[in-house]
Image (tube, rainbow, N blue to C red; front, top):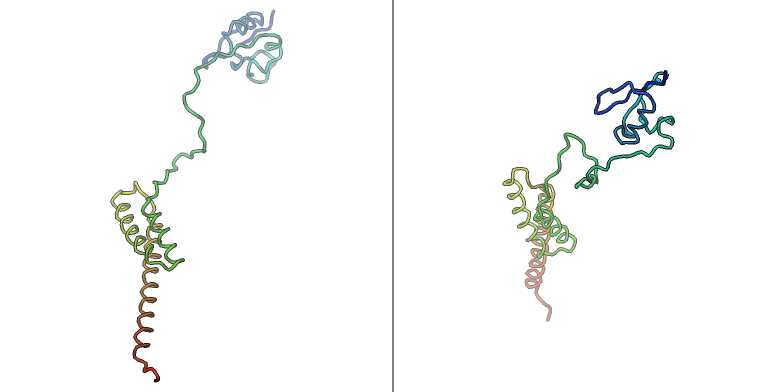
Length: 172
């Protein structure tokens, strides 16, 4: 009696069929190289392309499915992970202006740092979580205010030098 084979099609067990009939189904494309087969003596079901007795010398037709219109993901996504909201441009501007003002001791960037920081915080709060960058805005505000305080001390110091210089009598 010829060897009887079983094959799996659409998660349904089919067969038994003899080996010649199974080979003709494979050749006709009715049984694909990715379908599983089993015969007596095999420990478990195997993919057709892994069974030498069936795949040797037979043309394996793999139906060409439609190409996916989607590109593969560039980054692994974890279920439950959230995408952070976009950062406020005003918060970034506040931070940059504040840090530049501190480094250069320029009130020209300290004032915009404070203005941008306050605007960023109000827009972030009004967005109800749709806009991020609160920490950047706060650091920009702090550095902007520090810049203005440093400038205030410099101006006060210069005024004191001028006033003290005027009150010292000059020798004839």
